[in-house]
Length: 406
Ligand SMILES: [Zn+2]
Image (cartoon, rainbow, N blue to C red):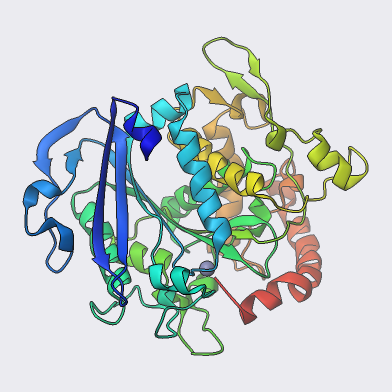
């Protein structure tokens, strides 16, 4: 926050959306480059913004830009989520061309703690009333789940202003390995748009695992064993439904400990200078961090996760956004097999339709990136291979997921 304030061209606004059951504030920070600002401000919402005292001037200005909405710690013990958010904030604070482009193009709205009581009390997944708040987004009660009630109203307001473009709720995962996203199961072009962003994030991070991303209908409806509450009440499903089927609604998850493999990522090409940019330690697969753990350079095992890995996932999310909106001044796509965004789309669209619409594969998952050169004509063969692979993986990793989760 302080660093943002030191940048004169950054607009920053901090406000309390509401208080938790134990009267702890749930804050929201709005920031963007101070351009395309309108005189008009966002409206007050009944029952929210207790510190505004009814003053409409206390709300942030409206900008002629789309909104990226990020939230964290609905499950209070999921600290990797906060490190991912730190990575996003640090990326945006740096005065790089990439950060400037994002801030010029978008308004970021961040709610760092959705469950401040749980964080204060050191809980893992619940609030003071033993509620898993990520199951109450469909119809949150202003007194029983005040923070969820508040955050949903604020998100829907952005949708009503026709501003909301991307919603991501950040989490951590105790059983399913890797860093990945859960998305909704949508139809047609929306599904491609939905899958494209996580795919682009994986092309920008060694540790974000595209194979672990899931977009199945089943994942939207699965019931928790303990309380029978369904995931239809979680953030990404409810926000998508409340915001007219918004395609880019996600839960971003990072395992606490490690992943299954690391990605192959292409070099970064600076469009202006035509030069390849050097990697930083965490994005360099030949770095000691990876090679010492793997023993040999050509092995691709994931290292034990550290704060740097989580922050890098946040950074990769930002770069993925730049690629998604085709405004990345230093992109990896040019040096990749895809060459550009269209290349990624044409590679994945036939599979997307195959996997999610024409026929239900057992895993409802995208293909492993290692097989990316094998195209639609031999997809039949791949589906058999994947079924075998899926069965062993299901027993090992996916099955335990249904016992805990999201
Ligand atoms: Zn969680």
